[in-house]
Amino acid sequence: MTDATRTLLVGPFNRVEGDLEIRLEVEDGRVRAAQANSPLFRGFERMLLGKDPRDALTITPRICGICSISQSAAAAQALAALTGARPAPQGALAAAILHGVENLADHVTHFNLFFMPDFARPAYAGRAWHDAAVTRFTAAKGSAIRAAVEARAKLFHIVGLLGGKWPHTLAIQPAGVTRAPTARDRQRIRLSLAGFRRYLEGVVFGAPVEAFAALGSRDALLGWETGDAGLFLRIARDLGLEALGRGPGRYLSFGAYPLPDGRAMRAGVWADGQIRPLDTGAITEDLTHAWMLGPTAHPAQGTTEPDMAMAEPAYSWCKAPRLGGQTMEVGALARAVVDGHPLARDLAARGGGVLARIAGRLLEIARTQILLEDWAAALRPGEPFMADTPPLSDGAGEGLVEAARGALGHWIRVESGRIAGYQIVAPTTWNFSPRDAAGTPGPVEAALVGAPVRPGEDTPLAVQHIVRSFDPCMVCTVH
Image 1 (cartoon, rainbow, N blue to C red):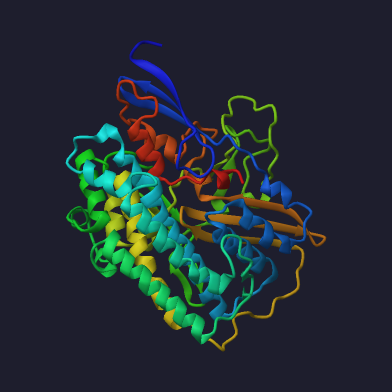
Image 2 (cartoon, rainbow, N blue to C red; image 1 turned 45 degrees about the horizontal axis):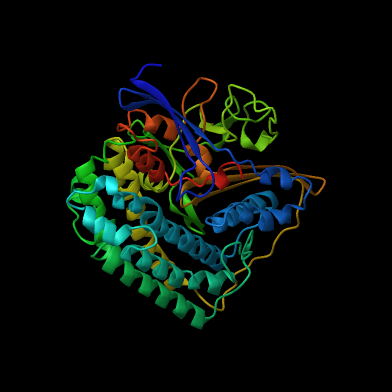
């Protein structure tokens, strides 16, 4: 190794859910190669074996304290597919509200508490925007952070009304939800959403949410100047975040919020500038570089057998999901791209880097607020919120949802009335996967190649921006 080349082990990362290590090969001041390691194995898939299938509704939400409703919704859909249950229309609407509130709160938390505080670091002192970033986003002190935490807490009153508690509510079931809201509950939900709109329009966007949701191009986005979104875009222009951390250019979405008339955001795959239908039968999990034993297989046939020897060439507990043998990026940007939003499509066509991912989350904040308001207005107290649930039977089921961080899938197999197989592919499993048998790096590993590393940096700022733009949740990655 010459003076111009070195190896960096970056991690654990602060302000990341769970443990994450990234090994960087640095040459001439830039990342030449990266390996993402999920060093924590938890084994929820193994815990479920032999259990009553309904236990999945209790156990899987405890995979994560951030996206527990997403896990609950995926488990409920897998059981619905297994039994043939069809949620009551109003129950599906209430479940979408619960899930949408969690995703909306997650995006606001990520922007304010996880991503933006990096720009308040002393390394950026002297930049024209730095003083504003320090005032707004200094960890635990910034005025934007305090406002976000307060607004988030009030938004979660909705989950209390519909779900009883958060996290780990048991409200979402295969045939609907366990509690029918009253007319008073509906009014309180609408008031909570009105309060959150005031926060978004007064702090995050500095303008109506509809105006941000209507942005149709990258140029229109970069011209946005108001609110904390405007501050982020000033920073992004100055630091060149559009070109930093570009992804594979392939985006996957399972489709968000299943409702009686279809999903609120469509499912599909976007690659090579074209949209195509999603074939979940083409999903496989490659174990070549994971500390796991077994063949490459579809999740419905997959197993979770840890390789306690941790033998090479493996370097992570994370499996490597692929669709038709290809890596896929998932997340808010992917959802908007697949759904056909013109701003997201323009950003993706230009490479889909750090700027695009954060803009995708901001865009989804605005769009989800509007959806939630429409759904709350459509609640009909007095109608059934739970349908009849068919009896459990042996068989298999697939539950596909969109968590804040991207596509989440649960696959269940039941034999003799007990869970014989349960596999979960989480969003961070897609984005932070290791290499596969062909040596193809996962999305974040590929995005890190070319990132600048300044002299003396042991935890490069550019690397942190890229990693946080994917918003990893490592405890979900290997469950």
